[in-house]
Image (cartoon, rainbow, N blue to C red; front, side):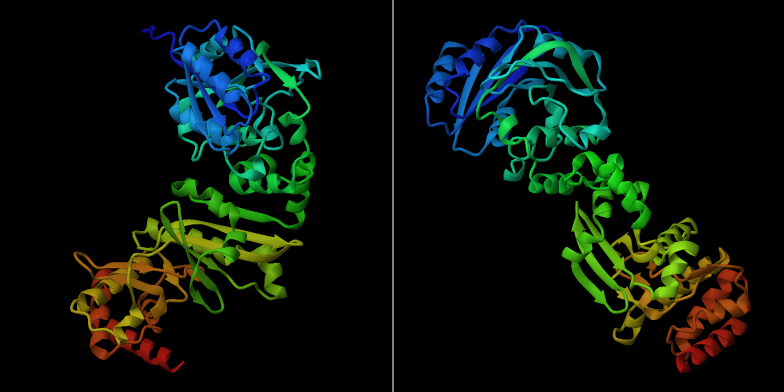
Length: 495
């Protein structure tokens, strides 16, 4: 039967597990809906009673009902299976022991059609069975959703929003019975509104083994899972993680913030990496491939298609812990800000993702800077180990990069052979400058500029190439630059 555009298809999905006592009543409730364009997708989750026979009988009787079966994997897996098979624009999950009112689907569709900003529509809910009375829900807010589930599982949403959530309903056993809470957080952490219709549209059957009873006491494993899956949302709404005493989470995080302050900055170009950034330093301790370990440690992470270079700076001694805690930006923060300044000046450096600075008991403790991994395969020190066909071009590119920094009032205070990267694969030579926390911003003349090369070992002919190019870029006398650079490198080599 073909329906007009104003009656889009609604898929009612019903997971079933040993619900033979109630399933028929639930199906008759859904079939009594006033909405004319509807399909019912039943997924039996390995029942051992007569549920499959009842579902098969109704599927044979009604063209709008489809019946699927799977080995027992839980309600979340059954819902995901049903939604994957659903053809409707809108999804309404209904548990196999509950009932809906005839007008619920019609009013929910109307709300979603008229309000694109609304993502989820629910209704008032009443108990029946072992308990009666209205369920009292507090007004919806993101902050409250971060602490507790406040939307019943039987709520309508667009299938496209489910499609955008990786994995749909979480099938982890730690969240069994509360997977709808996880789904609502997944939907709303990218924005959107919620509407509760002002009438009783769902009758919730309270029985001995209902999910509300068996999952009432949240286990630590559930809280831990919510923290790991929705860290960014929780930090935005609660100022930190969800605690086992969920009601007090925001207050606990506020108090902890006074004592253990944390500053996390994510560059706007990499907002999708916010969860990674919020997970530092625990992610750094547990994962990653060590690229360098000395005074500081550098690790490589593969995250959401990015290759991230994360640098952990050594904890400072007591005096510097006070200075960095109150008087000066951390090395990680300075490296991030300096990278932005280099890029603004047209100087190459790995794209800055952000930084994290942690304080404990008001004193500086840890800091992490995060950039994309550089694509340059060589450092300046590789001149000692390799023969480069484009040797002079590389030296000139390094000289031009240095001149550009100096012309923009940028002086790298740790301008060493390991902190200049380059790539000579094809086309123009790419040069990138790294290890940026030690930089100053001041006028840099000829003498100071030549002295900045002092930690770059070079033969006389290498010096001549770099100094001549540097002089040309800055309008200095080449011979004076050669002499100044040679003196600086000779002095640097002895120091």
